[in-house]
Image 1 (tube, rainbow, N blue to C red):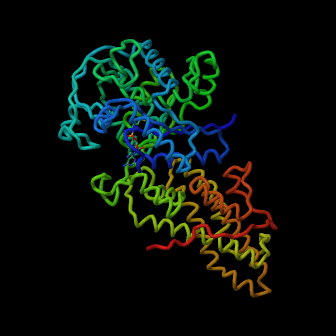
Image 2 (cartoon, helix red, strand yellow):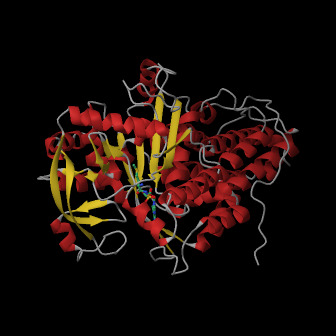
Image 3 (cartoon, protein in one colour):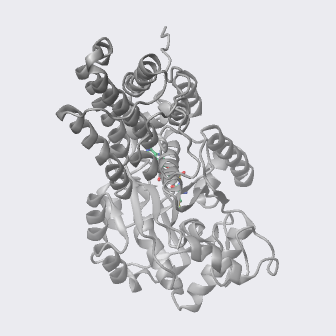
Length: 529
Ligand code: MSP
């Protein structure tokens, strides 16, 4: 059976333009998706936008427009920006699309049929920026302000439909505790488990006072709570099993339920829901409980990454430290897209909070040039000069060669392990460290001296061979992270990618006599003002 891999990002609120936070999640998901495609599995990478809820209504009011117009405008900006950043999502879902609305209606109907929804009344606190109900204790602990935005909480009192969360709390606890749903990083798992312990409230899932949302199928006076609508995207985009709707939003009959089943069966359950830490609770509790109510399989991994600050402070438009599209474009223009990707992934262990520092972009670029660019240059130039651009066979191997051979031999498993554990910073640093090791090896073996001594030609062959193998392996391991630069480097080395998995590419050796192409500088020096 073909291996399948399904990864999602959160669907973003189109109430503004994408910024560093959205870009970070999407780039990380893109790196993971590219890795899995290169690893040979069938991969599906989903992103999109979340149109409904009070936050969109309020943002539209502030911007003197309608939620529809606001969403349409920003949605297009998201789509265009992902293209500009070379994001390789396979699908893009908007919660306004018929394929979504129809399937969500079906989802609510099934939850109603399971007896999991009842009418009641809610009185309590609500964080409108987060679209989140806040318990009395939590509200009090943060002086009735949002933990995320610092804005005052709203007080809601209304008749509402409830979803029986309490019915599922023990099962969700079990699923997370036993790692049936892996919650990463591990500290987040403990956080969720302790919040779940003793949870005794059902979830208000409808609002009668709001008009902007999906209408409750059993009561047209109510619209559905935005998180029930939003979380469903992960399956509505694939096509809900048993529903007559399909993933292209065609009318019933154009593609029957069986085919829709096939789509979902292929990719559901999701392998990874990649999210920011502030929305883990929804994904770790509401979503599994909904899936249990629907009798559908649970996602395998929830990864909650950290939050970016900028130059040591929370990002804010008024603070002048906001990393918006223009700032990100400028980085792309000066240093390349791949440098931006490298910087984002390298900035902290995956899962920790991160801080954007302008000065570190130049450092990241210099590091790529000094380590990867330099290795490629030296390798290409030496083999061209001393061996007519043909990789020589391995000659005599001594201890120092054996050490490097071992380092390179360990690389494929280390890279696979880093991706399996979603240790993205490690996945980035492994090839960089390997490149450093080859550079140090060149410094120590001094091939330019060996070249001058006719008695040392076998040693020179070994050094040149290992440089070529090392350089190729490093570039191959960097393919998901630096797709353009790594591919350009491999093209210079005349390495053909077609049909080879990333494990093949990192694991195999170039044959003796392999003809290299023409050298070119990968990371040109940048003139700074
Ligand atoms: N619409 C909901 C998600 C629904 S998913 C079923 C939402 N949207 S959002 O537009 O607010 O995007 C939140 C996501 O953006 C975070 O989970 C994170 O992925 C990213 N980030 C936004 N700001 C961020 C930082 N400052 N730092 C890192 N990522 C953050 O929540």
